[in-house]
Image 1 (cartoon, rainbow, N blue to C red):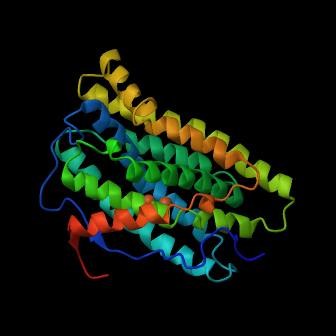
Image 2: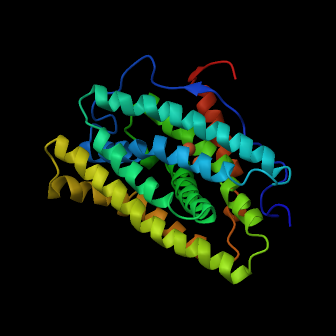
Length: 285
Ligand SMILES: [Fe+2]
Ligand SMILES: [Fe+2]
């Protein structure tokens, strides 16, 4: 077994070096002028630099010995995640510039990752697969339904759309690496391992994101029921960001699941066209 047959043979994971938000700092409540939505997306972003560094480490650990084209895809994945980290560091710094204290949020993400890093390399890789499935699910929905980012500033929208697009492009890299690394494992054990890790990851992910969101709302003086009711409506009703993420968990736990069983390349092409016409700042690749 070399690579999952579900990954499209002609898949291209592009190396793009794009920069966002260098010219204009976003307002404090950059998403719809709404503290709840802004807090949720800022809470996500606060975990990206430490989280994506962990993704890179856990996948790189298994790079040696992987066959082509997977090895090349791992390199492209590493490149894309390093670009995401760079841009979200800037995005997080802009949140600090408007007065948020992001450090406790980053610390919470760091403590969780430190906990995961005490597990075996294969469990760490399985955790990355789970989190990559989250990002791919959120990415698909963010691109498929404009309601997720409606009301966000144009530059923030571009940043999140670019990130979403690349998460879809490389959505199977960690998973295919896991399939390769566990190729000699009994199928039941292989499935059980990734499913148990997914269950634990789901719980910890919710804990970190909602605690981080609450921290930011507290800093805004509106960590109250009215704000949470509106935010929970956004997250679990329409557009239902977190409800869709939970649905994705059940999809992932099905034996035989593969990220590319949902072929969202047409969505990718549409997003790419959108990104190009919105003219982000581009530097040499
Ligand atoms: Fe990423
Ligand atoms: Fe990713």
